[in-house]
Amino acid sequence: MSVTRLKRKHRKNIARANNKQNIIKNLLRTPVLKNVDLEELKSRFTTSAANA
Image 1 (cartoon, rainbow, N blue to C red):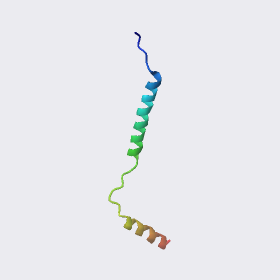
Image 2 (cartoon, rainbow, N blue to C red):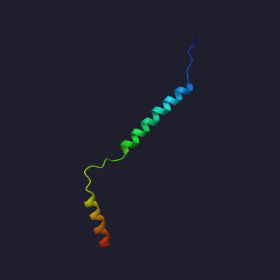
Image 3 (cartoon, one colour):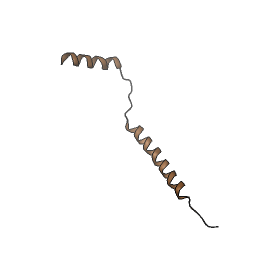
Image 4 (cartoon, rainbow, N blue to C red):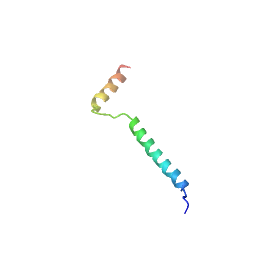
């Protein structure tokens, strides 16, 4: 018996792995927001708009 390679499946597996790596890289690229005070941010925008 000879050894046959499933070339299409191999390409699909490699593409699937690359897609998962890219998804993880994109998720790591976005910064994590922690302990954000929304009221304080809103007050900053309202005071700067009133001054301008």
